[in-house]
Image (cartoon, rainbow over all chains, first blue to last red; front, top):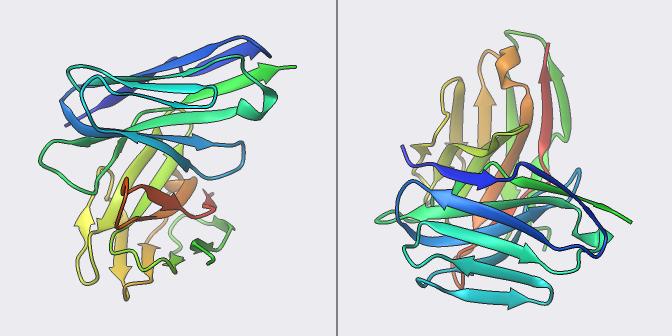
Length: 112
Length: 113
């Protein structure tokens, strides 16, 4: 079945350093969404990418969708302690609607 | 709006016991979902309901049943709990506009001994 792989599983950074998590799908996606889950919390939607090669920014967060629509990345510039949590990508396969396939998530720890 | 609510927050079961996890949303969403979250596994879809009156299996449906009681409520039932079902369970509903993002409930932490 379709798989979405996300790396790395864990990342520890010093506050102020940059952070990137990568997401790769075994099949072409119609769109990809990113969610953030704070420790002990529930996933919260961050953004959706739909177009091939799309880049979107939210303050210090930059999201990219690959040209082939099979990979995506999230880059955080100058991490802060408020960035701590697990970041998930979730893709929708072509010709399906409503069902998301989640990556395993990347857990970010930020040392002050 | 309360968003997506789930009950209970915590539950401990013995192997073989049954229970129902409740979920409700007040956003008038059509689609609702049940996921389980295990360390290193991300979120895996158990069952989903695209609209009132319909349910479909997800990636890991074995050992579970669901009921879409009405547009607001979607329950998950464990008929005979097993230790492998120890997990955190999240209910979600899907927006009907914009990015069609999913809104998650606070989760139920279930331990089966």
